[in-house]
Length: 97
Image 1 (tube, rainbow, N blue to C red):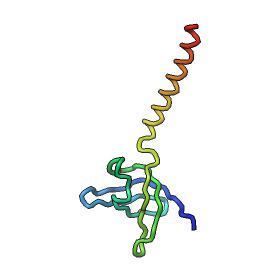
Image 2: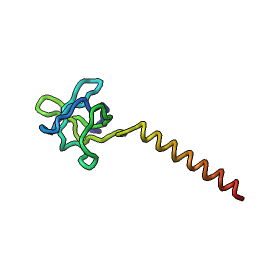
Image 3: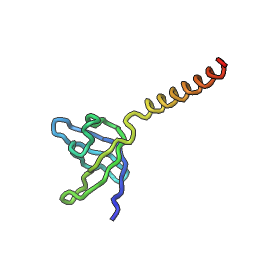
């Protein structure tokens, strides 16, 4: 049986208790910090994530949580800047000939 990834946004997270909830179209789903990628820091509110859902004593729990894009506006700006640098370099290389 293939497991399906779901998407949502971190709705709330309590660092003292180590758990929070992800808001999805189907409703809120519980997650524990141990299922979040530790190397990328703590979850932030409204952060987009994808995850697998498993049954946890009659309720669902998110596991194997991955960030979709922690800062899409910054990523897009960086991509545009890199693209512009590449164009400028190409134009200057033709100009110097």
